[in-house]
Amino acid sequence: MSGIFDLTGRVAVITGGNGGIGLGIAQALNAAGCNVSIWGRNAEKNANAAASMKAGPGKVATQFCDVSDSGSVKTAMKATLDTFGRVDGCFANAGIGGGGRRAFIDRTEEEWRKMFATNLDGVFHVFQAAARHMTDRAEAGDKFGRLVATSSLASLFGTARNEHYAGTKAALNALCRALGVELARHGVTANAILPGWIKSDMTAGIMANDKFVANVMPRIPLRRFGEPSDFGGIAVYIMSKASSYHTADCFVIDGGYTAF
Image (cartoon, rainbow, N blue to C red; front, side, top):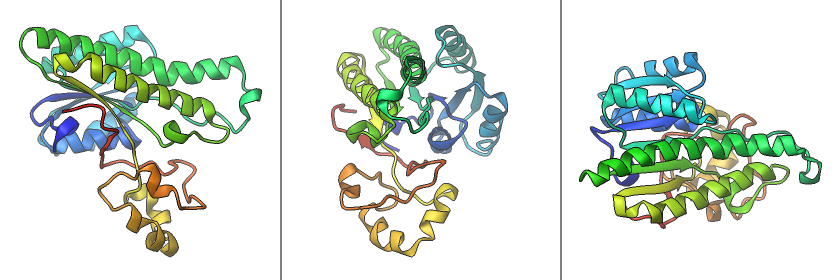
């Protein structure tokens, strides 16, 4: 693994790592020999995620954490440092999408604030805790750290009747760009990653569509993330209600604003 995923023998925190993209990140890192601490609010899902990596070479731990609460994040960070001694990577995948199909002008302030609190506050709290630890280490001569937020095509060109989700994801992209500049002198990088189509259980039904496989898949090779231009000529997206076209397991950097 290279770049932001070059964490072999190190320690990574995964928020929202008990399902979807977050679990794919955790499994990939663990398989490469990275020690992983999974943070989430569902103890059962945390345990199941850890069990799915028990054969990997890296150690796995879980921590209860409500990422929207700064106190909970501080407690989880302390517990992780007590267990592993350090945190080298932080992958923030917690958040919510959807929220109904009503138009922007019909949204309530409560809905708007809930979306922003979940998607933005969580990343702020987790990244700040991780960045403080990483910059403290840098001042002691250990310059290394990776901050990564999962993104969405919605953050690049919006989405009908899901504008508050697109707004939060676009804000996270901007945050990563700003952090990439601010933290560079500490050896800490910040990136967003953009998921795309791969073969998985979640996309089995889609992959059974001969026209999709013949016309779309050749434009988005497996093991590479799709970019907006890959989808530009497609008139109709075929997607599951549960996962849209987001899947896990392989990653590429979204943008080129951070050297690593």
